[in-house]
Length: 545
Image: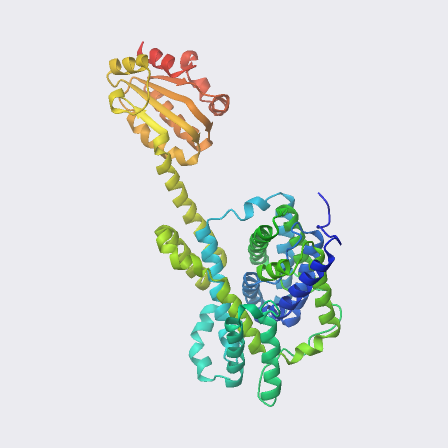
């Protein structure tokens, strides 16, 4: 595996155009996310530069543009609020330490080659989680949209303060935010090829605020520090380290999901294949560096990635070009950003939040799956009003339980208990049919097929009720390709029930894997020497004698 990402000069023109286009989009988004998080506009810029730089250098998806994203910003905003509330003096430093820890977790996931498993989550849970994050991001903009800083606390506190916020609306800022949203929603598609709507809104609304509301009481970004960012020494709190650890895991996993899903989008556009584990390592390095220098956490950004590819980006050189342009802004053009109204950034963040909500699935979820709909909306409510971790945890648990239940039902036909051959659809040869018919339901034929994984253990246990009152049990494993632990334990219980009743048990046609599983469990040693038969007919003959 090469250390560096795919960087070459074969498509330099397309990479330069793609990088410039991505930088134009990244600037307003980084400023908006920085302000929305509470860490400041400069934190958004530092995050866009550092995450973008190291992910482009060391990642595994050449055209992926990495920067602060809506989901990562929402989680980080909650982390900042939580840690500052517990330790006002050091809370912000601890929050940046969480970003560093999240990056370490991402590198660990990549080193352990877990990339292909990160996105293997039920869509109903992912949709609910992302939609919940989008709703939170929208709610976080209510105060700034109306001209106020958000009240301290979470979503509930903001919703409770809505009456007071509306009672004292700053009209000028409301107008600016509304114009921003109007531009973002109403800008014709044919113009978006020449200038991103976010940048147009930033320029137009900032100009309006300077020309028409110069004397108004409008909140603006203010001076952004120029030069190199300050190194943030990692800081831990003995009282908060457990909370910091959990927050870092959540932030890290979310960043992995965000980056890899966007990498899939990039693959579909470029007809290439990203290296998921290498991408996680690159994302991890980027977030570690961002946290050490006071930047927001980041991940692959779908919007920036798509427009960069459409502009011609084909290698990681585009990402480096984008970073260089953002560095120019920080070092030499930061003064131009000082007059940007916070209202325009609120409008941009509001549009991002609306776009994150999975409207396409929510509108038809009830037609696709009622149970999936319940999970999706439950995860949304838990994400918005309780906790992100609780939402994902409960959503995954319920989804997995429902999946196991469905697997058990679907695999019920893979486990058959045959007493009367006339009442079964199992294909028996003439000799097997005659012997079972003559046994007059004294022999129970236990037939299984396919992969006996955990979902079939319930079906085996239910069929086990047929064992009672039988003189012999024949377990036909001829068509079993794999015997899982859960299914083996359920089968063991049925066999031991017969042995305890001093009845005969025969196992027929088991393959090497199944025999090894039963032997390692110690079950084979409990059976008489003649209990293992090569085929079903031989086992039924032995049970009949």
